Length: 428
Ligand code: PLP
Image (tube, rainbow, N blue to C red; front, side, top):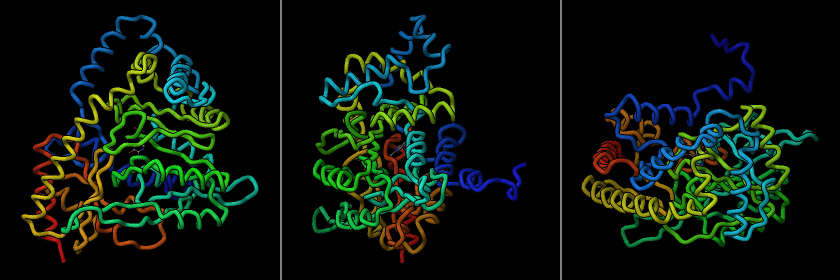
């Protein structure tokens, strides 16, 4: 039994019931032992038919190749990742985008979740001079998976964005914009070690435009800090994005890639691209924490990295699939909330596969609201989890929730009806 009196502070912090633990518990149960639950919760990708077919074919092919079976099942890789994979990945970025990426700029991790755990603790906390350093999140709300990753407490500083209404007289669509003045002012305090941002942003589906990235990049250069750019849903792959954006790279960027949203979350494969000292540190952390990385994902996609076809999977198969789901879910939301006569709004759905709903007349907290939905077999994620690091008590924290619309159409449709009905019962 774990005695709370003898457990360390770090142990207690990491082993408590965190938001990400709860989300993954609920998601995992809904997908395994509770099939009646309407799963609009965590970030599980859909089984996109064309990709699923390609993955099955590739697996069959791999089993026919003795050297691939050995690389996949029989050998430990170096902690940085499989050398051929790393070389191929760097070469793909060089020839496609002209970026000066060499193998020493690449490191594999067991999922990008693990990459942020390593990076956050490399940069944030007490430095060797005793100074407390923090991670700045330029756009709050931000991915709840980062929230509990710091070994030390209070390592996040989040910036409240500006809000813009972007559609029509009935005001249902809004968008968060980074407030650059607020970001700059916070950077001036001199205790920020790195900026961290997801593009597309989980939970809101916001996608930072190229000029916003340029502005952040300028600030990072000016203050001499790196930007960690989490591209779990973004470009170059899986490219689940509905606006037009370009991939970016510069010496002060640390890019995070993942094979999860392409359709391979079970392989646990994250890829870090950044300064050689950073990726070397990531490789050391991998050795300490787990010796080596999972090999299956690297071996599966190696030919697609070598021939560049990994870059086509998003535009050809994933984007059309998720875009169709996105538009349908939007329609159902409009219809259901109209019928229920509930004031509501949603964030511009520019990327990923979430709708971020805002219920300004909700009279209970989002957490309680989502609990009631769960009792009605609808799994969603309450807003409260995404506002860590923000000092002020912004109402969005309690009035928003995230829904994943990538599930079966009937499930999403029924769930949306229940959400609107429950909202009608709980409005002021
Ligand atoms: N970053 C974002 C924004 C995510 O939504 C997720 C998962 O949902 C991750 C990182 C972690 O993904 P993985 O560890 O599967 O690569």
